[in-house]
Length: 558
Image (tube, rainbow, N blue to C red; front, side, top):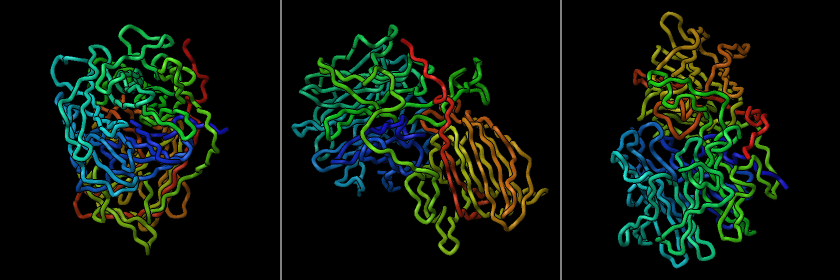
């Protein structure tokens, strides 16, 4: 018997929605401002997962230009019924104000590979829309409700409405099925089993207090009863979470909640859910938000972002589900399968695989194209790293706190407004950018730029390098302390900066970031608008699995 090591989708992979079609499992996760929209992962055994592709790939059907950091695609819900795949999702276009703009849509396809239909607009009372297919053929939309009033009428609300199965327009009026002054619920999914409608919902936000609650009813429209098992230890006002890490702050998997349930062909039940692995660093203390000062004083930092884990579900004699082993997500889940060894990742630029994404827009030939005669990816410099509109950038998720990455490219900048290189980044305000540029006093050079909450500094001087030779850029990380080096031609590897604390690239530390995770990016900028290009020949990435939290013995509270 092999074991699934949690998280099963490592690095930035939040809000998982899982389905099984025959022997195939698919998980859809949120992509926010990253393009294309809605990442798909595939498995046949729940242990070995691969990046499968994306659902929202047509820029005529999804326009993310100008959306803010961690806006865009939120909490997709992937379902399958009678030969048709359905995807509900939200496009968030305003979030940092009380009046959220949460546009909700449904697309369909007879194949997971598409083509997918044009988006159909549906009611947008809030985000996290979820589609439920009843066994009588009727379809229902469940979503949470945002409330811009001060004060709010309720801490949390959920609505349900019946949809026409062809047009997806509302039949009748939406009905409130949950309202509370204390417990906030979101991310709802309904499962029908043994005549009961089970309402699984994420509770208590997205931080270290996060959890998963379950309610049930004999009628899809309610009333729903909250599950309040005696084995759950909680404080007054806390949610009755069947899955959470909030009572065990030293446990390696935190922020656990926002689950979605699937049944295997053998009849076993599993739930995939959000989790996150904390670093050993915290935000500084302080009471005022000033430049570089985090909005959450003394909170732990999570540079990998929110990830996807799996738990085994058991149904009790009382008909309620519980997590096998308690409320904590296990570090390993026993599943009968052989584990694959993925090894070092090497990019094929002639046919980029689904692990790569860009920011807000597709990388058409205006931004980059493969040059077969050079066996290189040519990237044309466009807007700067802070652009919400036209960046030449591709990135993939960082999956472990410790890793190695290497990039080989050629670039002949003409002025300081030409830049190309390798970036570790959380968003357009928070990054470490090892890049080649040109300085009028030094000439062609290399340097390391740090952006932290709109404050910028160079961590190295401009280091002169030779013209017309390939350059290798190196980033290595140990527990997210990052070291940078380079080489020119066949020359020696030269270290230029070591042990830079990268934990500022975290939900808790970034002013505008909330929900994504750190990426490693290849990018090119030309702020003169002339399109100066670089040629990228190779990229490799290797996970080093020595995260500090897994070296500690977990402390479990009784």
